[in-house]
Image: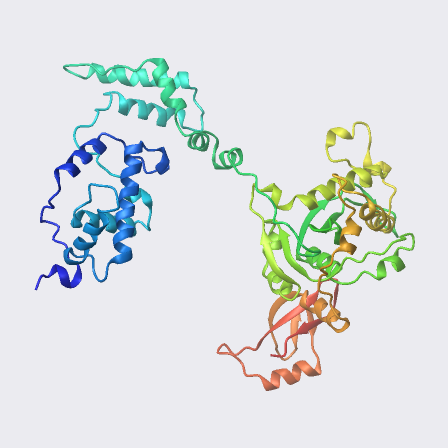
Length: 495
């Protein structure tokens, strides 16, 4: 029995027999150059035809073969293939080697390109090649950003020193124009990466992407913080509080403001928590709290995708844990991709120009705009008055103003959408406030739970301690959630 017929074994040391026509074709192809980075249709026609021929024979045999790719199975099919496919037909071992290369490369057509350019003598490099590379690497591709002219001077000095050490013969010096061409032919990204750093290089050669199209309100909601350009006064003591932070949630579909919070603390989990609660729950209270507002603010419901930046407050475990029942997905934008969250940033610009910069006590966006104006002395707006003006501007003015392209009005787009966001039922609202509480892990001791330098205890907590065993360290841990705005009570899980 022929061993080759049983499992397709190929004797790699046995020479293949090729026809005279095949040898002639290989010699012609040998003169062509191969580059795996270019498309197949960029090769000369001779190589293109050879690649398509090889692929045709592989497909022809593969569709008809029954068993392994052995001489007994392949040879008859090759004879049949030669009647309809380009000649000369390959020998069966040659075809098996093509098939192996093709499928091992993941069916890449480049695997079938003849690779004969490596045979024979190659053109020798210029004797000064290593000095060219040394000069470029040590001078031009550095953070010092040495000029091409200075790099060429350094290259010449390297060659001069090397020639002094040579007994016979001399290293040929490249002309200045040839050297310049070598430097200018370097990949631009690699040059900028070495000379300016990755951040500058990535920004220069980045692709400007597009946002995913939205189909309904609350499908994609952007959130961001910004200090407001205005000094506010305390309502009761009439002293200056400084600039507040505004956290805004912006619906990408309708371009409506769907939620906000104003705080005098740096952006934190608490400011995000307040803004999201303001977003997902109904806003029936707005007209009652701010009687000057004429229109409704119907924007509420579950957020499908919350688009955030890389601020520390968005990476906290508290946020991930709390948002599970409120937000289906959190999308973190990449640094250097400003188009991923442009809507909320444009909103801040509109707010500053239309409202904030018109108030007494505005600080403007840039210090040079102040000139002789002193916002600390001219601050006249109280916090309560500012909140009234802010809500009125959003509900009565911004929501009813056409967008920059005048293709729609935010509130109309919200109301006219056939697809509506999921609303929370009445019994779910209190649960949401609990879920958005700040998470802590504490032990239950004889004195209850100690948190914020206070002690929390109840009959239910004592009963829970009776019914649950201690861990290996002799402690009973429990997860708590706290409303940072009201520390008079905490919530604990009873399982």
